[in-house]
Length: 191
Length: 287
Image 1 (spheres, each protein chain N blue to C red):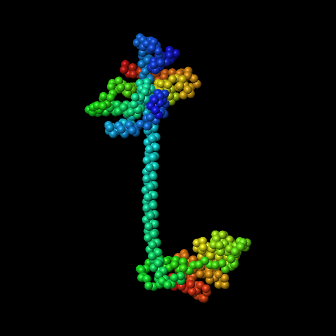
Image 2 (cartoon, each protein chain N blue to C red):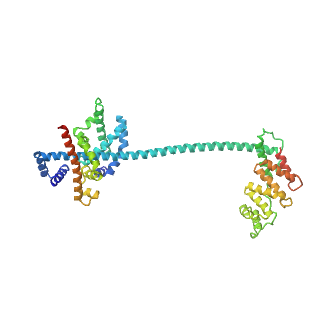
Image 3 (cartoon, chains in turn purple, yellow):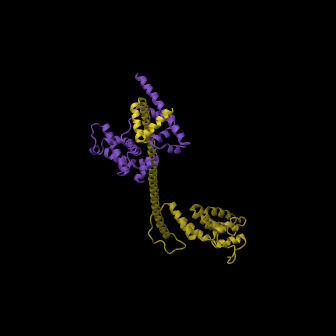
């Protein structure tokens, strides 16, 4: 698949294309990173997953609109950056490799950074499991894949756009109630 | 609820960048002025953040699934490779053993041939009596093996197909009568057709004799022998002596030397067309 087509497919939320891209480059990334940095395979696997997610997010969030190098090279650069972060995190005494320090500036670090975990996030994760698959798919398509309500209504077999919107609102409200309940609990505890 | 719903839609449009510049400015202004709206928006952002985190979890699960599938596939391929290697090793061993056995057999066969040639030179063969005793005598093989060799030689030297003595050779049409037709095929050396016809002619003793001859030609020796032994019970039977003679020959072929000697001895008791040949064979077998 040519780079622009890959970009379009991922931007449009084509999960299969993303998974294929993940699968095609996994072994070469892990082999390369293992040889160069000697990190544990399991850690490299997680870093690689983070790299693919960052790659995907940059496309869907509109930060990456066209490739200036091969998609694989771009992915590897993200992965190497994340390895640098991992090395800094785990071994404070080890300095970041010079070429990595020079390659990425602070704005790039923001570009590739993962979301911070907090209590609400964990609560929402749990709540999403509880409210069911249909709700999750609806919210996933709208907030993560950034699809329009028209597309979602069609893909998820809603009778019309209004019906899909109404369902989205209800699902969102359930999450909000859970967050507010948790917020009250925290306030009660602190008071 | 309507207001809250519209708030969510407004928030959605804001974070998706779907508001016009003026709408965006208006929203930013409201946020700075309305603490309730700001609190609501912060909760909204937390939820969206949570949805995104859960979505990434979902994708990670998908990645793990594909990792597992490929690992399983790879294990299957590795297993197939190992099985193929194991099969190749087994094949190699089997072929190797076969080759070794074949070499040993060839070696043995050569030894047998060499011994056969030696035996030929020692025996007084009815087909070749000129070469006899002047060749050097090699060490003898064990008795059992040597006896088998002698029996085999005797059989090869003395065995001839018994001729058709019941019907004149038919040169024209195939005869209608079963026995006659069977003998026609017997003469034509079409033993399968002859066998087919003769086996049913159980009431005709002569037919049964030729049935035994046919079986010998088809290498069905044990059945032939059993039939020939049955045919020896009546000395008045036309093929009485031939039945004994061919029983002896069959025993030689089956390497049943003791039985062969008994059969040939029967032929030496009184004068008959086979006496002289039987005595010669007995002489060979008793060496």
